[in-house]
Image (tube, rainbow, N blue to C red):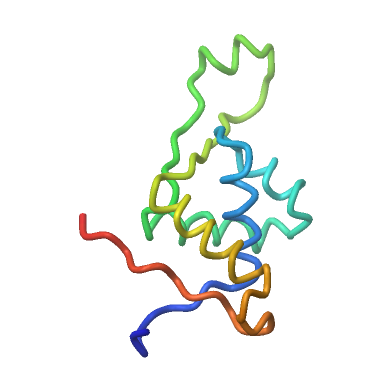
Length: 114
């Protein structure tokens, strides 16, 4: 393992595993609610995961908002990518304790070249 490989924090692993579990798009507030982590933790994690290519995001369209008959601001939706699914699997394996120190952050999988 490269000494420069980044580590995945337990909080990041939790958000990533949750986002990958249902195989659907999530909006940020949903992830805050299901993980139990504060907004100030989840939203920066989502930004880092998007930078790493583990998720992609899109803004809700006004047509989608109107079809739900919901007012307020547009939601930002997040979807896990193939790279994110691999990272989620690695995080789940590390969390299962298969010869891994549970107190240590899980390693980041190698990022694919763009």
